[in-house]
Length: 410
Image 1 (cartoon, rainbow, N blue to C red):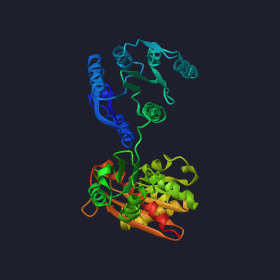
Image 2 (cartoon, rainbow, N blue to C red):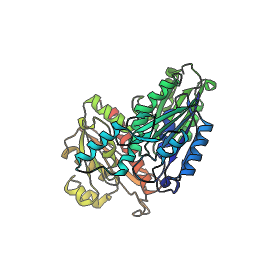
Image 3 (cartoon, one colour):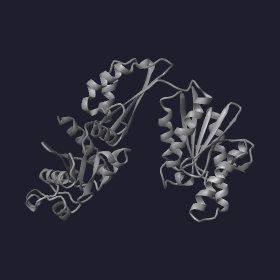
């Protein structure tokens, strides 16, 4: 196994202005491989500090992955510092330069000195093409050690890591793979998932496993400790029995992936009516490629006037039961079904907080409804926590409810 150390650079990370999203992503990508992450380092844009941390990382690991510091500003120091360590002076990469010229030329702008800096790399480095941004990544090898430098912007770094770095690492170390299996469980507590997995009939002495938790989702990863395959069929059979409908299809990374797949397989269309989630459910659905084939659209009915005038929720229902109620949620779903001419509609209305709660309907009270041509369903949940947690978990309940509603249709 090869040891990996990750160095995230940027004073904005050290000062707490933004959170490091790169190191967790890289670690998650490498977890099911024989590349073992041994440390995460975060360092500011100070040359001496950056040099010290990189040298320490090279000492503790076989591979160092550095993110950040490849931009056009004076505090982007990765090329200079890494070049000093590897005794390689910076030079302009011509392919990246031509790409940058074309980019700025299309905008009618001249290249600035900082832009030239951005397309420079240490002499002799292997170039890792940036398909999203302008700053190329690079790698250097010396004395059995490998240093890989990538941009710090997550939406540039992630495709570079998947499309460039991973194939490069496996070309250097062909024995870097390990057999793995991933399953995803929705709307269960992490402790419940942990206890059920721990009780499964699995050869744990030869399998490493762990749980990653996000709002409404637990991802369980099993990785072989050695070169032997893991008993995937046995694990999946046991998991299906233990988790049932809470377990996603193996091909689905998220609930929204699962819904788009199911709607496509069944030839169904979906509409949404959202209040407290403010369009979050629609955003998650439309993040999935191919969603346009199954998603008709959504209405963000934040005010009662929109609920009435757009979705035809009657004033009688609103006055009698209130905006946050199952009758209102059902009326919203039926209205979306009719107005947007879909096969299935889902609605959500609730009190996300921090204000607006009452004794009978405290903050976190959220009502959900699902409507089809022949059936309706509604339920209420009380979701504790801050506003963003209520909204995110509400969107998870909507998506999970849509999935169950699809399965209930004959």
